[in-house]
Amino acid sequence: MENIKIFDTHSDMLYDLARRKKAGVENRFDYHVNQLKDSVIKAAVWTMYSPDDFDLIEDLEIALKEIDFSKLPDFKVVLGLEGLRNLKCVEDIDKLYAMGFRHAMVTWNEENKYATGAKADPEHGISEEGIKLYKRMQELGMIIDLAHLNEKSFYQALEVVDKKIIYSHGCVKKLCGHVRNVTDDQMRALKKVDGLLGLTLANNFVSSNKAEQDLEHFLNHVDAAVEIMSIDNVCFGFDFMDYLSEFPNSNISDVSDATLAYRIIEGLRKRGYTEADIKKICYDNFFSRYGDCIYNK
Image (cartoon, rainbow, N blue to C red):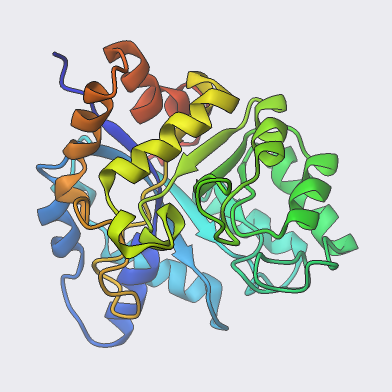
């Protein structure tokens, strides 16, 4: 069997580095290096999570200074943004692009001046400024991430943009009714634009029953997503939270951090997926589409 690697399409790395540095913690990057150096995860979208208000550019600069790429020399990174509530104006997306950012979600769960997140008013959608922002992101060739939008904003976004689309971290709503999971129709809409669904290990996305928040039930989401989207439009966006103090023990019980991601590959093999198909889901589906967005270290 091949040594299969994984491209994790959602990590809160940049948020963790900036927050810890501002709290006086030194060498926080080493925590992540120690996990990733022996992990099957060999590439990731590292994002700045924006659950509240702060100076976005300042925090991004802090986070980037904390990274020592020489400690993970073969690791591939896409720099990303989980929410743009702190983007002062549409034109500032060009500043972030110049810093190396090639991925963005316009909201987290909130409604902001650009669009409406999954936990905000379901009747609200994308604003005129949001339409301008999405169009500019597409002009720049950025990966446009629809995760965290409410359904109205999700479909409105797909009326505005149709290239480099991903839903980086979610699961299948018919298996678990979490507000952030996607319906069958949303999966079909993603497939129509050749987008990707990144399946997440967040335990309450996998099941509302604690006894089912495990690898086997996560793999049920893989099966369900592949059935609708095909093997070519599914990937993984793990959203590990072991290092985020506000979300303790929030991933599935048997894959609780990056060191245990190999268990997913083993589980796919037991389910009968071929080595070629496992490579697609784990790495190639994302890299073949968005490899041009890898950060030039």
